[in-house]
Length: 341
Image (cartoon, rainbow, N blue to C red; front, side):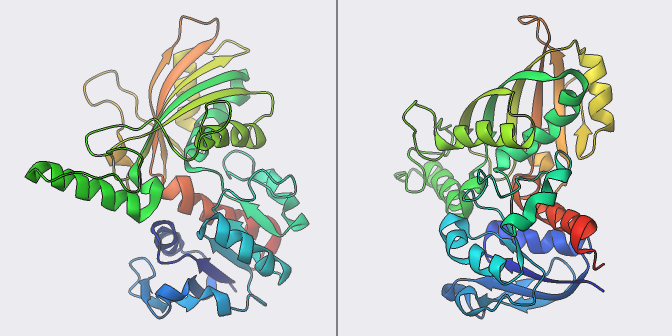
């Protein structure tokens, strides 16, 4: 016996990836519904590489009664409109948008980090998926925090354009092509030219000079991992199609050598340590594409603080940063609570 599962936003980058991962991981599904806006109604979407296709239904007309869970990739505006309706009908919503992440009645879950927090999902019947850059970082931080208690995190991100959706990917492609043939480049999705450039601005600016993306990393890390951790982030968009990278500097309460950190990370769930101190002995975004793991490289001690480490963290943002984490939450929900399969 399996689950009745909904994927909402099934025609977008993350929604399609959710379908791929559900198929890859052989999630126990008795019935699957794929939803999107009226613009995509009637389109066909693939269920991974199984050869199965599903017709897209209009989310406005869909009745969630009797469905077990819904994986949402429809943005905050869509979640605000539809998540309460699905939740009230008894269909647990696993939401990829930012809307509910900091709601105290909504668990914010990374299964390798805080699986027990899912037990509070019944308060709203909604579970939040964290920001893509937060998700991969806390997977890397959790085992180190358990070993030596992290006091402070300083992170600079190198975030791919797929984090801005299809429009972001199209803009990088079109601008790159225009530059090669000598055509004029006009920014549309991004605030400045993204091709052959980096932009230290993701999401809107806040009063203190940080961006909302940076704020998300701070508050989400505290909610998921430990409210006492101090976090400062600088989030940067880079001309990479898929795969987010992060340069992370950590200060610990206790002593933790680079060698011990490597041993811990090598055994940690969800982590793949690739850390050879030689040419190519590290992971770059292009190697993370299509993979489940969060990769860690360049682990080294920071002599400028008493107990400090620096490391490099890379992950496929459409997978661990979004779709994979949502499916892992669905698996966790099934194991701990629904137990139908």
